[in-house]
Amino acid sequence: MAWTAVILLSGLPAIVTGHVARRRAVRRGLGGRWLALAGIAGCWVCVLVALLAAAALVGVVGGLAVLIGS
Image (cartoon, rainbow, N blue to C red; front, side, top):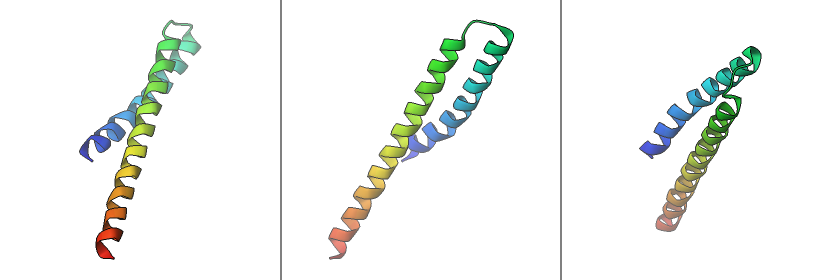
């Protein structure tokens, strides 16, 4: 569960900084727009996988609690 927290705590600021970098690259006409977009997409995928894994873990633990309790 700790790795999920690490991914969420590092992924969310990475998404924000990716958006800032992409906006600056577009506004100033610099290169790297696609690299920033790839970083944003990669971070969103990592955050989504971490949330799904956390939900699956909660479901498994909850299911085991129901089975043990009955």
